[in-house]
Length: 485
Image (cartoon, rainbow, N blue to C red):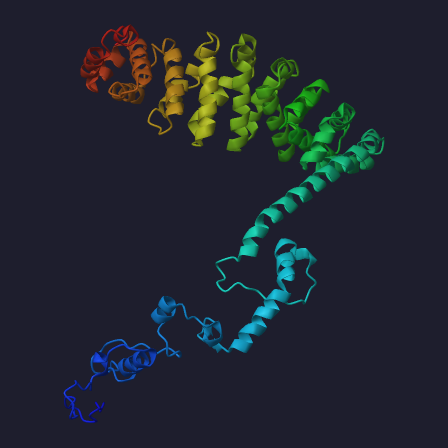
């Protein structure tokens, strides 16, 4: 009979026994005949191994269970009643009875959790519902499934609110029309303020623009009142309506353009903004608006605004209106000239750096530069020098407009001196890759050096001859470049 003994000393294990069969002092060599032997091996390896103090190796705490997980999976002998779970993140363990209690509690509150996720507003205050969420940054399945229902609920609420706004405005419009036509200015102001508030919501805004009587009453109140606040509310309402094509049509048909043009003389900044932006929207999108603005004296009012307003965004909208009105209409160009427009436009090009304002102003100058009457006025106001200031700008659209304007003006500036900076910049532009830029630069140089000895000398001094020869060689058969070069 073999015996198993373990030496308590630190020396090597000894084998004893009279039998010739091997005696195992090292349990790791024991045959794996049954589960008990495996358990002994595991205990030997776990509790008799190096703690890590001497070797520096990382130790691992033994499991509470005496079974290895590998054996459970392979043999299919998993017994839930014998398993322990690490339920809390902190490593706390629960007994099976506690686990059963938790499962029962979660099962009983399942419907409450679903209701709380999908309809949180129905949960009474102070009621605590157990959560199955362990990681705060990872939503539960119920929470993920509730997202579409929440989106649907919000959509339904928005539809209900939209319909409520539309119904409210529709019911209120007849009474508001009556109040806008009242003799009492206080009543008119209150009505205009209420209409302005309604116009801020989409549903009620559509109800207002669908009522020609309402738009007419609003324009009448705006044109006849002496109260600035009433004017501001009415103009603000028209501004809100002008963001819709239907609103633009309603304003146009109700005679709103003459009233809006009159507001361009208002001392109130907000009224000026509402008026010019509404007119701008009309000019852009409503057919017939250009003629109506011209007939109402809009051009003269807009040129006057250039002199008395320093808001760059306001000036950008105003100059864009002037460009729309002047393009292709000689009468408008002459009205701008008679109102002192060229001088104001040149002043803006010299005084401001806001790119959009410079771009819109250069567009007006480009339109006016083809007019024989405006051309000398722009040159005399210093337009050549003002436009030359921006040829090195990063905005290509601004540079292009300045070049086209300079080309149109250059035949009226052949006798002008003191254009040294412009001539130098034009020679530099000849080396560019943009064909439009090279074409304009060559054309301007051709006109400015015609019958002008001083300008010819300057071009030669800044390397113009070499640049022109190189331009001709690169242009090939492009006559629009080779002829002026």
